Length: 235
View (tube, rainbow, N blue to C red):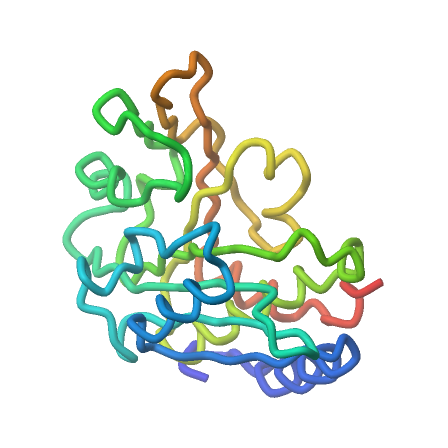
């Protein structure tokens, strides 16, 4: 592990593999986002690849990004996540997003980008350095067998472990829709900080905007979160 003092990686990995075996799922990790895009067309056609991870827009490779998919026993993709490094050594996340928040839209809604807005909270003001954006989070909601099982928590921790091993980030952040925040998604994934009303997407032909929270963790948060036994998260 590249994070100094981090010594829980092997144990977390082994426990996660046991839990994935218990649920009869397999994990695939890659950095070829052209291949990932084709995978989504086959298995997640209702939600195409989002702009933050589009290989036609960004230069993505093993040094700065990865995707993670989980497959069920029939080989079908049931879960996705991706992470990507942002180099914010010369500016903080608040300044970066003021200029570029429109590069991180949710996939699906018809968004009026010009009328949308980002508001920086106190956390975003101090986030800088080697920062990872966490997105592409999706779980096949037709699979009732996994609902309430705690599997999403394990998959979230496993993605963070992969991020730590590959990129040694100073911070990780993402955006979560308010409706999912109120259902506890950020906590299940392991995020320890959230900033309400940080992003608001104005939808065309709708009066009510789509509001998102920014969730984030610092390096020390990641280290602490990795000390929590995975087995405690599974029903």
